[in-house]
Every structure is written in structure tokens, then in C-alpha cells.
Image 1 (cartoon, rainbow, N blue to C red):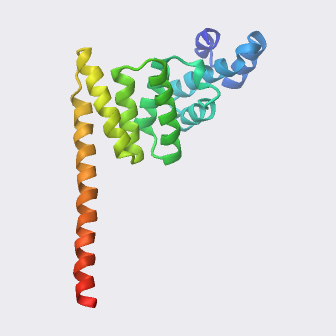
Image 2 (tube, helix red, strand yellow):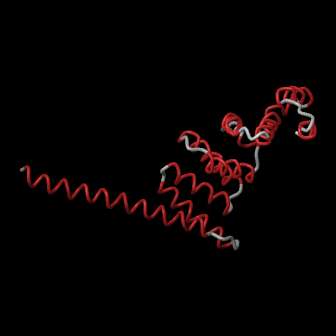
Image 3 (cartoon, rainbow, N blue to C red):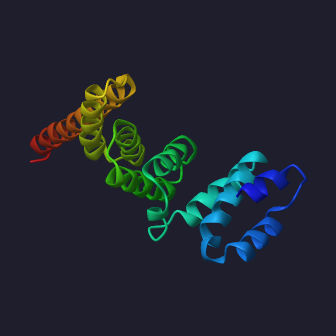
Length: 178
């Protein structure tokens, strides 16, 4: 990684750097190639390639190679950048792995927001409540998570109201038809 970072200024291309790092550190070539690719694509503002590097390497087999903070950073980036439901589900697994390694306010907050974005309002609510408790216990500002919790409650209330309205309409229509 440091090899590539210093040679990046010399316009070394990514495949050449990956080939070199694989020869020097063959046992670590996967993760080092990942770091090289993400560094390269981020520096060159190549968002699609950066996103592809994340989703291709951060698989269930590889998440254990990262610490809680890194996984949370990748998951939060995905929350802010991804709209594809499959990629959001994948990012949820990164956030879950982060929480499993070290449960803190920040990664529980990320997980709650990802659940919400995926449409899983119940897990969003449960995880937001946990994040708020952790955040308040450690003196963090939990206002954004409290906002999420409010959105989760409103979503649940809207679903209940909608189902109730449909039931009333069904009863009224049934009375007219029979």
C-alpha cells in the first residue's frame, strides 16, 4: 500500500502496482490489492470503480480481515452512496460485522440507517434505540439517530393507518355488495 501511495505521484497504474504488490506479498495480495484499488479509485474520483471494489471484495469470507471501524466506514459510505437494494443488503452485513466486532454508538447508528434505507423499519427502530442508549451512555450527540427513530415510528404508524383504512373500505364495500 505504501509502495503504491508513494509511486502514485509518478502516475503508476493500478494493474502494475497490484502485480508488484502480489509478487512482494503473495500471502496478502487480496487485501492489499483491495486497498490499492480503493485508494486509486478514490484519488481519481472513479466512483463506480470504487463502489465495485467494495462490493467485490467485502464478501462474507473477507469481512473478518477488517476492524470494526473500517467496516463501519465502508457501510456508512454505502448508506450515503448506494441505491441498489442488493448493495444495501450487502452493506448491512458489513455494519452487522462491525457491530459484532465492537458494538458502539456509531456502528449501531449506521446499521439502523441501513435497515431503514432497506425498508426494514422494525430492525431500524430496534437498532436505533440501541444506538441511542449507547450514544447517551458515552456522551455522543444522538440527535440524528433520534430523527431516524421518529421516522421509523411514523412509517409504522402510516402502515397501520393504511391497513386500517383498507379494512374500513373493505367493510363498507362488503355492506354495499351484500
